[in-house]
Length: 455
Image (cartoon, rainbow, N blue to C red; front, side, top):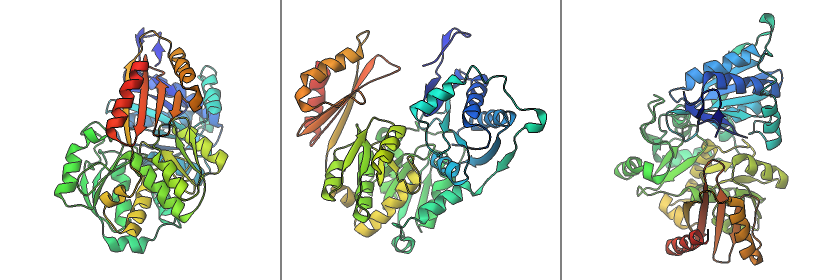
């Protein structure tokens, strides 16, 4: 959290390697946007900067401030309009820009917004790059271009279509074969950027689309986090419509959530697992997922004699490890699929294309596809620790389970033969999160209760 001494109140602004986010009018102020955009422009240097937004109601206000600040710094701006975050990532690289800003607070509610800041590779900043940008905050405020050195704006409507064309051109995709299936799909875009991109993509694949929450209003009709408890109406619609499956994306379209033909959650952990299974069936290679992602990925990779590497939680961490081990696919159990040939970032459009090809070749239903995957159950809890030192708590647990070679790259993960547990401290709250995966829900619940007592 960010403390504003000027206002004397605790604001909501959160700063991380992915950018800044906060509640409009309570942490994310116009002056804050100018301050960070200015520092970011100095970090990037002169050149083109790509800008997009997820369509939420405050997006135009924030974008106008961002673009105005970049022009004042002397940077040219390529405005993609309302589009997915992975579209901005793709176009930074494709257009050889020096950086990119996506205006999106991901799955946060209506009142939130954010600046997602990218480097010139079209990726989220590394910790080192983030530290360098933060160091420029105090130096950059009065460093603006002269009247005859201001930047210019180009509105580039082809940005989204270039991104989708790259997806359709993947060697794994057989458009004709998928089109023959004539899939019937319920699509829920929570009135965000997905409403501008997902219908176009699905029509390219010959799908019949039943749209819900796709009115482009920018007002989220429900909590935008694509968790099952927020998708009850959508799940009922899938079953009522007799659709082949349902697709739900978050406001900026980097997370992909699937619903079976029976109106049941496919499971975000299964989203990445089936994508890994499909890619490894076509191309052998390494896989990277984070420390909180299902062991099902390991089982699938083992069947293809491939190796799984794990990184700390977070897209930037997964991408860093993917580059180190030259992974052919990566992602996170939150429904994020990363395919290096298109984007070094989570991309729900890529995930959708892989799913359609996989399901076409599989020849069965979504439920049958799910049942073909290794079956595990994940349970998540959190516990308040008050004033106790979270590091001391985790160190104590690490000593207790030292013979199991605990991993402390990101909190503490301990692997056992029949389950694993991951403890992660919060940087903003006095809590420790606990995640357990086992081969039955009953066992997972029993184990997590045991570990919570140990905390």
